[in-house]
Image (cartoon, rainbow, N blue to C red):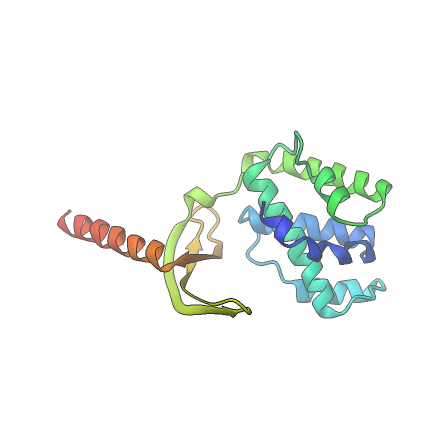
Amino acid sequence: MEFLKREALFQHLPLLNKEMLLLLIDSALLYLTHRKQYFDSGEFYEQALGVGCQLSKNEFKSACEGLTVLIEWMLKNNPENAGRFTFLNILSTHSALGEDLLTEIDGFFTRKIKEYADKKPLFGNLHLIDVDWNAGITVATDSSNGLNTPYVKLQLNLANPQTGLCSRETISLDYLEFKNLLRETRKISSIMNTL
């Protein structure tokens, strides 16, 4: 579960007021279902300062990232918000939000999920516009040995033909995965050229 690796991002959520949390949840849902073109934590930070937020810009950005990662995971893995890993269970376990606030936020999230039920994430219906990539080597050392791992990062620029909105997805691959992807892409390209 991706959000577990980023549990530290939830530590600043209790410092946001209820209205700001609800706004961030709704905006993240709209963005992640490709109904809104961007999710700008800087813009929301200005609004948060206006209502007395005491977080630094980086702390606010990490809180936004934590919510976005969690909501993205929920949309992909538990869009019904049911079972063991519900929005409420995850936030109550991994954040210090109060019980009343958690219940209210969970109710809001559940209502919004139902409202957007016919607007499920359009990850499968997107068109690839452009691919950017970079390669590098991860270097880590400890007392016993060195680790040099080659990697490739692909940044896919996607467009939703139904809404016209664009999004960006980043994929990290090790060298062998990238080599296989490149080989398969060449096969597809040669087949497409014969049509």
